[in-house]
Image 1 (cartoon, rainbow, N blue to C red):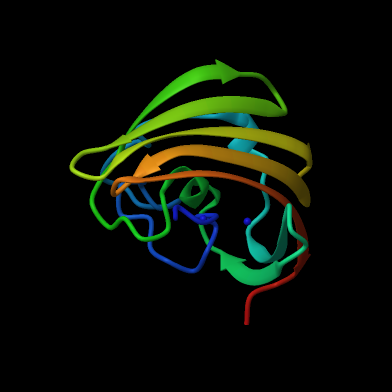
Image 2 (cartoon, rainbow, N blue to C red; image 1 turned 90 degrees about the vertical axis):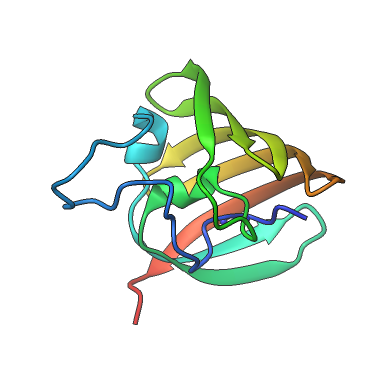
Amino acid sequence: MAVAGLALAATGASAQQRPGAATAARPVDVPAINLIQKGKWAARDSEGNERVMCVRDPYQILRPEKITTPCQHVVMESAASRATVRSICTGHGTMLTRISTDTPRQVTVEMQGVIDGQPFSETYDAKRIGDCS
């Protein structure tokens, strides 16, 4: 599943609270993201390129892959299996992410925006393929 690149990569999600942490709540709560299972995922972009990654926190999807500073998230639409979230990453840019959770093991992610002066538009179909090693 993160240019921005599909952010369901093995990078940390420092702007998002890790599950089980006792200090703070998540900046946003999105049911469609909450459905996504942790584990090993294969994400295929619109050009057919596939990437395998370990998803430890499904909220990584809201973070551009190369950004390590916190981003603010505004939920534009939220339903049981789909959501649209605008992310504002101070000093880096903005992006709009549309998530469609077909099942907890299969999602489609559309991302577009401008990060570090570079416009991008990407679509990924991602499937859970197992547990992380």
